[in-house]
Length: 342
Image (cartoon, rainbow, N blue to C red; front, side, top):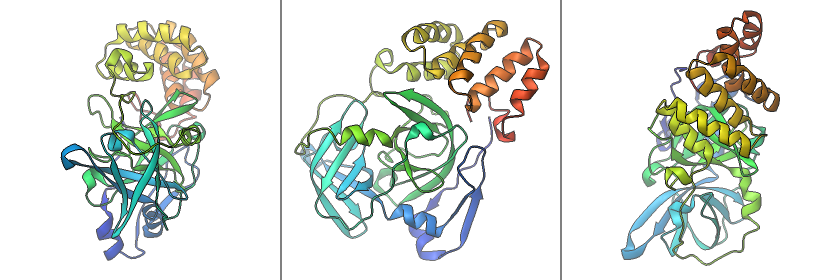
């Protein structure tokens, strides 16, 4: 797997001590532009990311993060606020109590309405326009502590419910739920939600463009909410891409092949299903059978680095060296030797 070392900084130290010093730069294939990030870029993210505090039964305090997405609107995870009747968005010494929320518990996104805020909203970018390999940045408040900033890349995109759940190497710790995942231009693409099964170094963000549907939900008063997020369900009830992700991590390739075959029947236009079948064929020593589903996957997602890499490997395994080399030539060097997803 590509060795990527995310930049991790305590933002309180950065903003007080480094001024406008340039921190680093990250250039990856598929990014909209070179991601030259300095204190000005981080400050811009900081101005729209807040700490969330939520008081539950017995005055138990829950904390997380949120992102300002509109006038007096903060987007966060429902699992941060679901046990509480009192929720606030906090920025330094400023505290903005929430007066209502729109909730989608299954997708784990809650839109808080607060008292008048002076914080600027971010621009939201659809996750469907992202590509594997794109540079992304996480900003949030893990465990309610100091602000935390990391950089990473989009490892995989999982089409789901009209958008794409983002799997990324931009790391965030436990308690960072609700933090923002931003593109190289500082646009919000996802809400950091949960770590991958097995803690393999990949993290999942719910697509921020689900905000459009969330705004159509009726506003409700703050109160404890029933239900579970899609990633909290028993494994057999989770979305197929999550079931598949666990099987892949545990190298249960025969089960993965069976699941992928059923997935294709249910979602024949989902490139992730075809990619999963092709990958499972390859890992069970059936490279010749892998080529056809992977060719279907590349028709549906011609620019996806994971598909290109898998098909290139399958073609090499069946002796089509020329076609394989042509495919690998389309990949950035850092994308060529990833075992599963970068």
